[in-house]
Length: 352
Image (cartoon, rainbow, N blue to C red; front, side, top):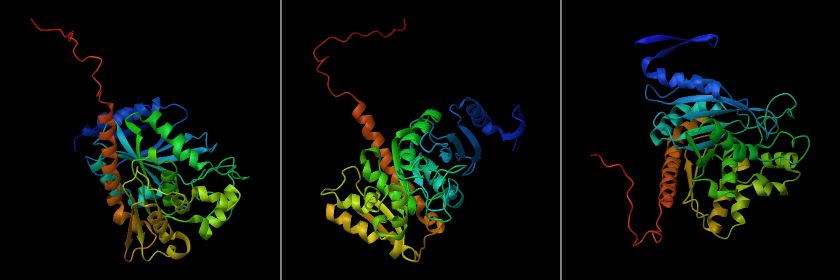
């Protein structure tokens, strides 16, 4: 490649291909112009010469009262009004696991669909954040709820972070994104978060899917541990239990033509923790369409996610595109009574 050395007074020197000069220059300017303590920690081009950029972004969170880091894939194929897929990761994960282990396929699929993917952390982190010596409570295990119980209530406000603060940060700092056009997905604890967040506010989301979600946390050991610690009781966790939320309904959600779930049959947590059959029964009771793919021989790992993530990205891309078309159509005026029968005045300049 014909490379030219570009010098920037940022304590380093960048070597960039001519084709990437404009994008990388704009990126550097973007770092300088970001406000509110927002920093891009890293930026990596993925998916070949026509691919987009995966970035890690840090900001000061008003929800968790800590610095928070999220991953963001921005497609090269779309520059304005870019829809967003929110990905929520599972227990012990941070913002990087999905990108490192399934990102190559997910980002390529997102590029084809012209959508961005945002990957938040699973909990607050840092000095003063309460934690326990356990993988399924505390740091890395926020369960996507707003904790009401001490000592977690000061920092563990992950429901508000994902549904309110993070979309606002994205809209402010990345104006090419359209956060009103959003879908949500996740794995395990993140699948639980995706399902409950979508079911609690369905008009907000174009679609929802999950891999190996915790479908009925009020009836499994993970939920029995997390809900009393964060919310005060198991019963209070029902408002964040996908099975309970569907059981409380008499009718299906008109916003979702179906809910997509993939579950491995060799998952060690299938019977004790995940319980997709409970969600399946609740969906049948209220008439909600549920596409539950039981994948023979797959376990709970990221190998499973990587195997089918392209299907999920395409699932969301199709529904995000439909929602965008409907929004555009609704913005076109259909009432012409104010001008019917009246002369048209033309103010255009006519060439002479």
